[in-house]
Image: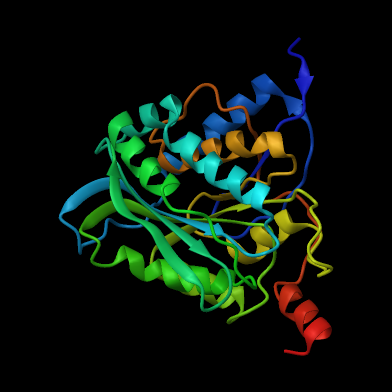
Length: 298
């Protein structure tokens, strides 16, 4: 029998509705079969229609929207950025990109914190080879990391959606990939921003960072993965991959990007797939706003 090992948990929304979650351990072989099934369903399922504003056809237009709020310590920030660098240069990811219908994706990297703090760190670029991936990640590594106040996932979504317009790319699907370690505590309700993004044909996936680091005395929602699933993600085959240990980060980012770009299921995705229908603790999508107001009165 295959040895039972703990695996990172992938939570998927089969119909585009934020899904409920459950953590469990499974065999590596079973996890691979589940991941393949979900990837195949995502590849064949209803994806947003290709954008009409661009002339360059790509398989995915991907916004990497990355949290740089003060709740992320410098070590976590470095780990987060390195995760994206290694993932985009991964031979497995590059092979999946090449096997797409167009053999290329368009990517931009955005950093965000509070409602007035969003920045395009690396503008839209094509990734279709090891050389183009390296150009993108070299540009990313050339920019020093920053740390800023507050957490506004809603503003990050509102900032990211217009980036798809007039970017000269026509993607089979448009994806915003949100990573962060806290709930929305500034800007409009995250569910409103999510719903508007989904109405525009964008899929939102999530990478909640759950490393249990001190958060400057500010209480945050405990099941952050459930918060992301219920309040942040949405769209066809949307999913959440939580990161609970530092050593999981690079693998989680690589798996997330692989799931977003793959047109057919790879055979060796070491990640557990949990259907959206399983039970999970319910969380308030206004938790962060309420906690901030109770602490600071604004």
